[in-house]
Length: 319
Image (cartoon, rainbow, N blue to C red; front, side, top):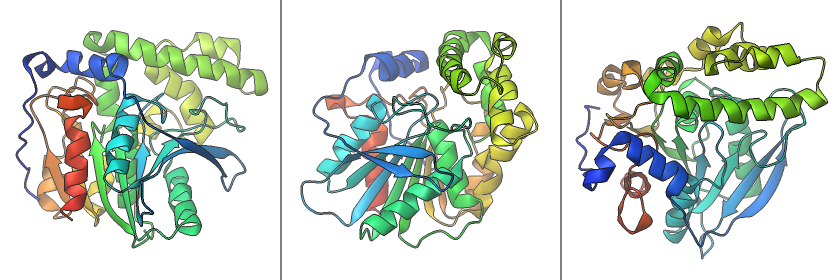
């Protein structure tokens, strides 16, 4: 589909990408969201924790929410999406990736941008557990890349999957990584790195033979983390092989499910390759929206409801 025009026009302060990003990540709160936790066992005997927000009436449609790097189902962009969607008649399944629910997962591996086997396990679980006629997926940042890769990599997808929305999706992981390593993003990348190292130290206590103090000391950047942990723990040669293998950009031509990608022009985490103009123009199933503002997973909106929260549900309703 051609690139679609965006009518997102936030208040003046939120036209600044950094302000929008920081407000969403550190200031916004979403009260009144009820979640019920369910733990599922994965094929490799590890587990995922799912946090459910149910519609007031029995529903035959479900929205799967996928958080970003070092997020969880309690982040405001997830709870805000869950609150609005459940009020509009969706059951909402907010996924906590391995090790992201407040409990360390059991295996040395954890989650990463391309772990679509875990998303597929969630989808299959929903189909077995409930009689959902319609499944929708909404992913943020890393979760957006994950959702796009999942529907484009060629697996047999259930017919119940009707639509996907990806918000602030780093479609080219190496391009995004290069942005995160720039001085303008130093504080963001430092925060991510510190969180990741803290989790890695917990892993080290359980798997001391797999990660040494020297390894951890050598992690100076996010790329180092992916070289030393992500690639080794998940079967990639190195960080660059991980980025190449798991970037969703290469899978976009094969997407056949109606998909909306919303990447703000002023998102400081996304490089030029993360805006898939050509792929959207050549695939009738892909809609690409590039608002001038929004930052990274920001998109401030009135009444504590973000633009992408409303936009995603409108996109699904129009399918």
